[in-house]
Length: 197
Image (cartoon, rainbow, N blue to C red; front, side):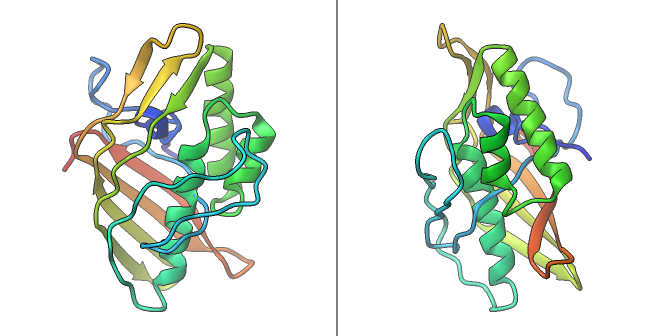
């Protein structure tokens, strides 16, 4: 599973990190993390116990989707809203925020990213400017592609405010989802390429 956050989200892949913004050689597409439930024009809410009380959301583009795609879109935005609400959260709060929207593999990857942040005295900050999304469904699997502006995302040193990683405008994302044994959609893998649009 390839997960890397771009800026705040990139640090997780979303915790995986920003590609091409740190002076490193571009490693190619990177995977990113989970979300909470919302509609494309709505806002997400979560009862998950986050260190910051409620899940905040970034505005979504005004798009409508066929009824069979709406649950996929809800999981997509839910995952990212929950992910971007995290900063230097505990393992348990990361799990609580993301489990409703992602597979255990994705959740545990993000848990590891945030554990690394805490170890390094860092936290993620900022939100993307979401772009229009494309949803492709093939049976029990789906792919959502988006070009978003992640330039307001960053990873910073908590004690000094030093920016150690940052997002990119024109970030190309791909999020893979699949129907789980419960019958619900879940994020199974995410990728982000800074400057990929």
